[in-house]
Image (cartoon, rainbow, N blue to C red):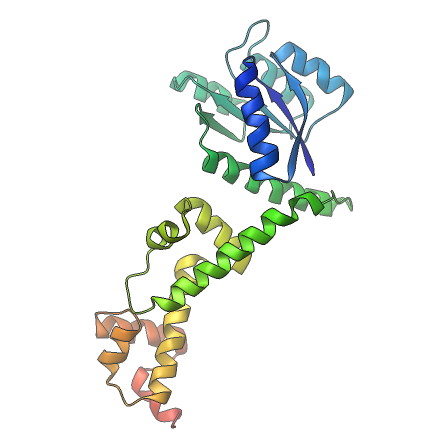
Length: 252
């Protein structure tokens, strides 16, 4: 489980973020909390977290001042900026210090989940490269749930191959943000969503060509292609042969 330092001067917001990170997202634990940049720098002398999530405007030392000092001493530490101020000047300054991302308050649960999920992949790879592994047991329920979602996505795809299957359509079915679903699908299957759909459609087309006497345009329709000519083009690109020749070379 990876450690996070929360730097936020409002107690309620800080507690809400902690609950979201530990109880909803999983895989991370808030091990340090600070109300301003000065407190955060002092805490880092005792223990260095895997990630810093910080506000911008705070008394004594603001988030940008703290980030500048952190970057000087720890150039590779992950930093996420969360602020209620959408002024582009703050964004530019934060990005100049090479923060990972910049989220506006109120924090979108999906956006924060997406950031931490991406971060976890990076930290896992980094840990493996140095021969050190963090305990993944606390995150197992989340990973299993994600696998369950992708299994459901695959089932939905196979059940709707003859229809227009967009990422938005699937995301609505599983109640998930499209960008996060796309990322999760690639992570779990090793394929882009669109490539997987095309592959499934071609497998159905090959099966129909072998097992039925349907016309090519009818098979195209059942495989999700209203335009038979386009279907034949895609089929040849992926199989190296035309639908008609494929049928001839695979008699029933």
